[in-house]
Length: 113
Image (cartoon, rainbow, N blue to C red; front, side, top):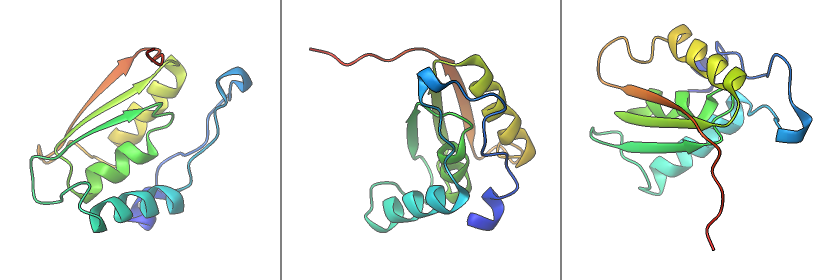
């Protein structure tokens, strides 16, 4: 998984300090998703959805698709980050076989209260 993720661009072209845009390494993304699989938080046997809030360049989105999530919503408040995430999904041909679908959403999510 980590090897496949290393083909994607995990860094931001022009990081915005005010948005605290830090890259998620292929190693970290693989570890998070494999831990989620191990703990049965997600399933690799179809019909698994995932919401990636603050997706950035899409490393967790990519990892989720590669381990078998079928429906992913990737949300970020930065158009440049979403563009990089889209490019990474294409680079890894995540949606190529039709088993995975990724929706990208430009939105700022605020806490309730």
